[in-house]
Amino acid sequence: MTLDTGISNISDGPDDPDGPDSPDIPDSAAPSAAPQDPVPDRSPATRLVPKDGTGRADVERLAGRFGWSHHRTTEASGTAPFEIVWISPDRGAAVHWIEGELTPVHYLVVGGPDIAPTVELLRRELDLHDDESLAELIDGTRDGSSLMDALNILGVHCSGPYEPQLFALFRWALNDPEPLVRRVALLSVANAGWPEFRPLVEYLRDHDPVAVVREDATAIASTLPETESP
Image (cartoon, rainbow, N blue to C red; front, side):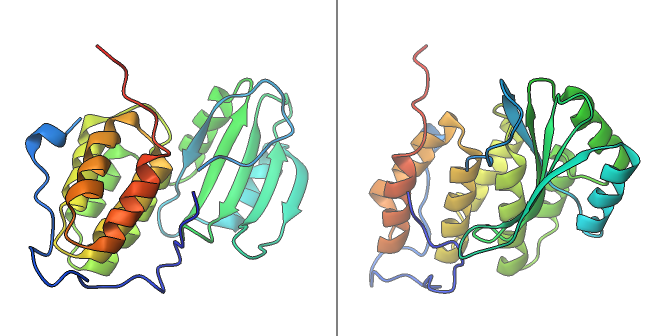
């Protein structure tokens, strides 16, 4: 899947002359890969998003305090983001600091065979978003730009198992009257990747009044895993 998430070329209005500005997703429709790291046999990676005010310098200081070994620094190039990778002293985890290009969010990815201690350390030492803070952030948005910023963060944050509370936030955003917000919500859905999104995305694919939203939904639906049969 290739989508331009720079959103500079995204239309901010419907391209169909008829129909409502937003889809009415029925109740029946309700329920990107981390960089390679040098640590073998890794468990599923965890993504962590710092709150405003926490950045690269804070993570670099943390690396020095806890003896992480610098593995590589990769400068941004095209759509590839800036990235620094460290290895924990016990080689149980690789810590990636990523400054997003396609999705304009700075975040951490922790992968490796034993990531729990490093994830716990990061949660303790840094001011990171959690489910509650993101719900509050989205609930407090007052304009489309702020909502899109919050949705980008939400999509990166959702690297764990399905969470009904966060799913409800996505569902609300996919019903937004602004096509641009629905497009950003779809990109965040793709980043989170929960199979429970499939009915919502397929509904937009088939029924959204704006052609470009339907096209995005078609591309994203093909990337989502199938929901498990009962």
